[in-house]
Structure formats: C-alpha cells, structure tokens
Image (cartoon, rainbow, N blue to C red; front, side, top):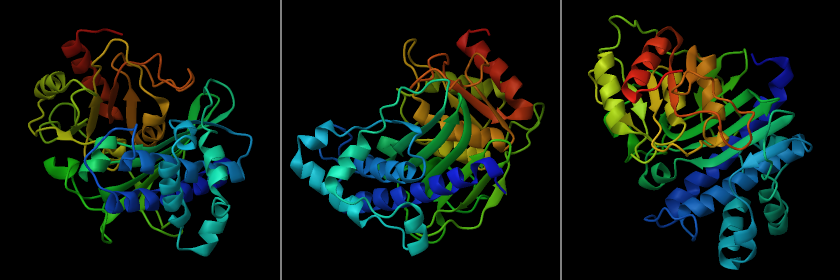
Length: 361
C-alpha cells in the first residue's frame, strides 16, 4: 500500500491520468493523422491541450496551492475559436464511467473559459522548494500519431525530490510478462482488454502496474526489474532507446550494446513508456544519449519514469553518473542524457557508456 503521506496524491493522479487517456484515445481515433506540428489543429495539439486541462482541473480541485509545471498554455486557443471549440468538445466528453471516480476528480470542467484558465496554470518555474506537479499530457508526439507508444505523465516533486509518479500507456500490453519486441514502436492498438497499462510509484513504497481503465482504479501488481548478471546475463538483455535519432545518439547506443555483449537489436519506442517497460522487466536498459551539448531535458519528460524505475529496483542517472536533478527549474539543467538499468548492473552499463562517449565523472 502507498505511504500514508501520499495516498490522496496517488489516487488523484491515477484517476486524472485515466480520464486524460480517455480523451487522447478518442482524439487518435476521431481526428485525421499525418502532421506532428503543434502550431495547427493536429491531433497532437488537440490531445495535448485537452488532456492537460483535465489533469490540471483535478489537481486544482484537491491541491489548490500546489505549483504546476506543464508544457501548454492557452494563448493560442484564445485567438483561434475553431481550435478552442474542437478541444472543448473533446474535454466535455472525456468522463470516467464510474460516477464516484468522476466526482472524486471534482467533476467536469464547467465551461470553456474555465478550461482556458486551467491551461494557464502550468507556468510554474519549478525549483527546489515546495510541492510541484509535472504534467506531460502526451509524451511521445510521433508515437501518438503513428499508433506507437505514448504516455500520459504526472509526477509530484516535493522540495526537489520526486515523491509520486504515474504513467498511463494506452498502447502497451496490460500483461507485465509480455516482452518488448521490435514492432512495439508502431502499429499498436489501444482497443481490447489486453492493452493499456497504468504504472505508478510512491517514494519508498515500490512500483506497481494495473490495467488502464475508463472508471475507477483497478487492483495493482507490484513490479520489479529483471535481475541481470553483469558477467553472463547481458547476452539476452534488451535495451530501449528513442525512435527519433534527434532524441538519442543511436550509433553510440549500438556500440554500447556491442561492448556489453547484448545481442538483441534495440527496441525503439517513444515516450516514458520506456521507463515503465524496463521497470516491469519487459525490457532491461534504457539509454538516452546526448545529441547536443546545449540541449536540456524537460522535467516532465522524466519525473514519473525516474521514480517508477528506481522504486522497481533500478538506478537512473545521467551519463556522468549523477542522479537526475529535478530541483533546477523546468529542465534537468545539470544532467546530460539518461542511463537506466537494474541496480546491480547499472555501474557496469555506465562504465561502458562513459567509455563510448569518452566522458568521465
């Protein structure tokens, strides 16, 4: 069971993610695909705005004084009535089918102006003090469009430390025992009883998965990372990386895998679904290698996944071996890249990463 200090936060985050996932799934099935621009009326734009409004609505109902770090704001919608009305239509129809669960989130957003006001409440600068929620309403833009992996992500950071993390992954198998395969990054389905998973963790209380539902939160199962041997257990290991070469250096990842003795090809998938997948043992290692000396990762892209992996028995650092630092604002300003692996082999993986990248701590 969750730590008593964060039972309410966990419950609200889980229900909010499930309600937001209802919206993203409807957007995917009802809107024409083919663009990834976030400056038009694409499904990404509609899904991002709508899901973020729903999540902030729930957080504001229960935790009105907490700060929120989120990606979207309402300026574009105030100047584009057609886009605003399209999003509002999806928001109105995104409801949990359990009346008590819906009421627990504070009920529906009352009107379109309230939706706009909610969207503008994600402008916190973050930092090292206080309670700060991070939201990524659709993590994995291109995965969402191609029918691959994406995640609805919510994390709670308290005084710079991630305390609660929730990931809703509509296109991942519900069954924790299903291993990752090369085709997981595209042509997936969010329909049926065997797909859709909700990952969650509370600091010092373990990590859990449960089916992603359209009502109340389903019973959970504790998840653990695979226990791999650093001497002879890596030949059958699998590692995840981003689909987009612009997000992670895939050539260097391949060399790292070769040096570790990994024989399987990498599994390329979008979003924090990678964190959830290795946390439950569907994969083993997640590498995100820097492609730019100046790029700074956003905290909403990592907060929930970082906690879930660590609570499942893993270690998450950057390529220099430093813990991800969520106390520096809206970005991981002090970190470069991500190396996530089971705790007992993380040091071995990190050593190889540093050798290939020619960096030292």
